[in-house]
Length: 253
Length: 381
Image (cartoon, rainbow over all chains, first blue to last red; front, side):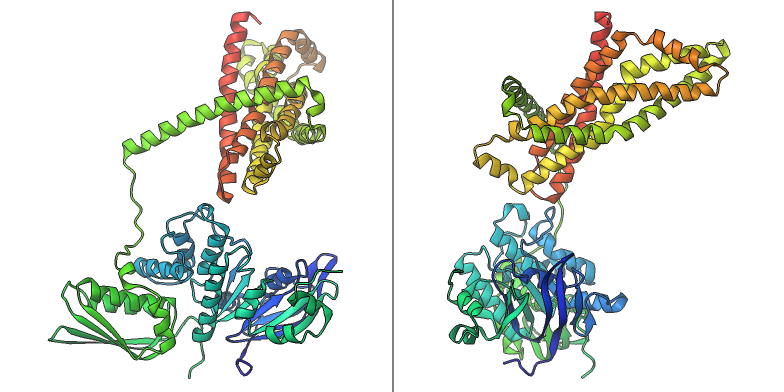
């Protein structure tokens, strides 16, 4: 559906890892505008490492990542500011500021980066929290919430400035099926109507089938992509054993 | 189309009011967080007052809307319906309209900007008092629990986690040697210098040695060591146990059936209690050596200084200082562990625990020192 949409993220021959341990070798792929791009794979295959490299939190061992044409590692000054405003990130454990209430967490980026008045910021922050189903919990501190609620609040905070791209690290892990389905619906709606781009790291099969317009699957042994395509196509005609195992939930023999 | 700027854009708002209670807001362009601040003020001006009216928003010319734009539309809706009127949004792209329908006007009508309410003074006083009382009770409870654990551990030495104890002893004892030595040396030097200046007119400089020796052995050696250790190790204990608490490691211990107090605090407390007399002893020696450094500048032979030191350094002075230091060590490590285990949730809680550990430890050390001073005086020790 979005094969002719402009490319927003380019990953070029990216190698990533920590010190001596190379986790990913020479990965290349593009993400297009409006896509829900899912990175999947078994635990420990480097999904989160790839994500952290894509948002510039880790220095790649080789290759580069461009978001909207700007290199995430070397961009400086105005280019860096523009780059950081382009995307929002939800970290695996939420990473909410523990000393601020949910509302204050969502307000923070709005207060720092816009000229909106207090009332407008309040309204926007409440709307974002309602979008993720957290109305009524605005005044609570992150520590008072369940893991799933913290995650949803983190998504609301990542969306505060309406970025073009949202990176979500394991958004539905630890969520109940109802909330998880609600979140999937929200992602589809935002991607479909507003043209937002999502890069989602997950290994929740129901969620993958619900939201993904395209997936890549990583593998620990091959240190790279073992499959790429639409999830239903990969499930119905798995190109290799790794993919079959993953989609059919077979254990390693 | 001009070059797309993610945050920028421009918008235009025309207000048309007619006599029959209908206000039309014709909005065009980008409704983004860059343009909304102006639109917000314009809309507020156009819709001021509490008159009942119908607000028509002509949004056919809107190209792009973000969260701020949505909030603006909601605000306009709230303004209209608050006064019993109606809002009619026309020409908005269906996908935006669908998104807007997620929000219920009635829920947002009551939204008031964040205002922090001041707490009245009597309430503050009450809260602080209640908090202090709670804190005091926790102290007593913890002292009891720790004493019980220590007695049990000493009766059954096999139950002590020796590896943790040696690690704690190394970190609080051996690793603290340089800093304790440096600070005590400088304290001794300054003490000798100041008292030397005062005694010089009387020709009594030689008694500086007595003064430095007795002051270091009885008071400054134990006190300085204890203050350094509360900043260094007391805070570290609190931060370490606090992080364990935040990460649910303490909860994991409890569910395994291990009581965190004996398991975590006994090795740390014993580690510090065992090493603090040695550190104090070393602080005493470097303090006296610091005094000697000062003495070099006066025209006395070194031998005279040390002879005077030996005559002043009675065993009771040394002993009273070392006895105190053991109790200081017990206090610092106990308070550090207690504050750590009291840590609430969240990252700022760990910092708070470390701060409270240091403050409480220093306060208790000074109080203890005063009690010991009085006690020793009446015992003639």
